[in-house]
Length: 130
Length: 376
Image 1 (spheres, rainbow over the protein chains, first blue to last red):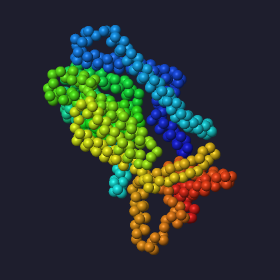
Image 2: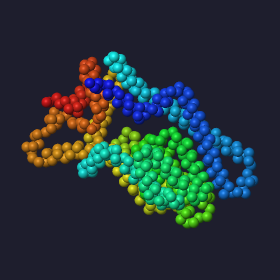
Image 3: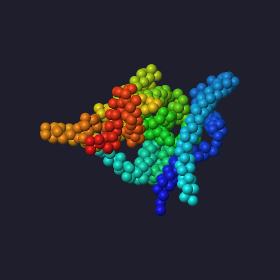
Image 4: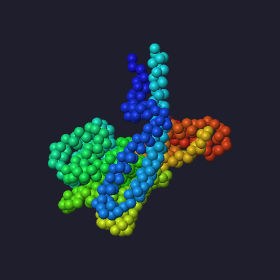
């Protein structure tokens, strides 16, 4: 005979796994600090690539707008400015990612708590039956 | 009004019953409109311009998540740019790369707002985008909306260059991205306006959604008008006015479909438990059923003096009727528990007699709400 409560528990767990559980269980494999560090590393790579793409666009624009003026430009001043903008972008984006990952980890932990409670109830039910 | 509400309920019911078919169909239509609009604007690659290809790709995208459609649309536009010039494709690639690496990799939940913003521009209702985002989404969605505006201006410039046969398309495109004042003005206005709509919508005021729509539209109108005059960008005042009116109408339609509240029947209750004192304000949603009930009651009141004596049970007992829609079952349960505790503790009642009365009243109300009538 079908165990109604067991079916309810299993359905709830399956629904969670299907929607957000997979991702959350993966995140749960990391310690909080490790997860945040990993996200920050990813952010560093992404910001660097995006910044290079953005700089490429800007230099292309400068080249078309004022080709000769670009030749007279002080290279070191230009490099310094580019680096300053890069660091500002990196810090801004890094901070956003830091807080976002922190919140995400906390949310994940909260939502997984319910899942593991269901799991515990299911296991207890199975043990009781056996 | 009742007819409209009934229509809304019917559509909802239809969607609920046929969700597995309706969602792909809607995605197919959105994909078809996107690819056709893209081809009509910058369509220069023969293969991608083929209608059969467009239908085929839209059909595939219909069965995949919506972010796939956004990605495929990006690839489509890059293909067209590549057929125009390699450098142009590189510019497009750089813009898409920045967009994907900085935002889209974080979450694919609201990515489609980028596509929807471009579509709203193409359909002539651009000012609806920030209002819709402010009403329906989280503040993070403002980022894909801003990217949508940038992409629209990029595609618009390329399209204009193709139409006018501009030789230096590369430079014109670069200018449109980096020093297009009209685009910067629109991006800043849309970001601020969406933020404003979101903040006003969440305020604890009556008619917050309507206020949000009106304030967002007025803000957009004023900022674009004044900014356009200061920056000396070309702005059609009639177009701006018409666009704003359409945006307000669209905002009201969104409100009607998403959340329509009846502030005339607002309920305010107060009760306490061990830790808190609760001031609860419940505003019922307007549904076709509630309107029909109201109409019936009004009709019964008008029909004859004799029939006026036959009042519903909750009116006979002197209680105001609390509509079922005004609370979720959990809210009702919490309220009842709190009220029960307040009623069961005589010390509390004697200490705060007013509170006790209120709690008892709220308990009786919740009994009516949950279908347990004292009288019966």
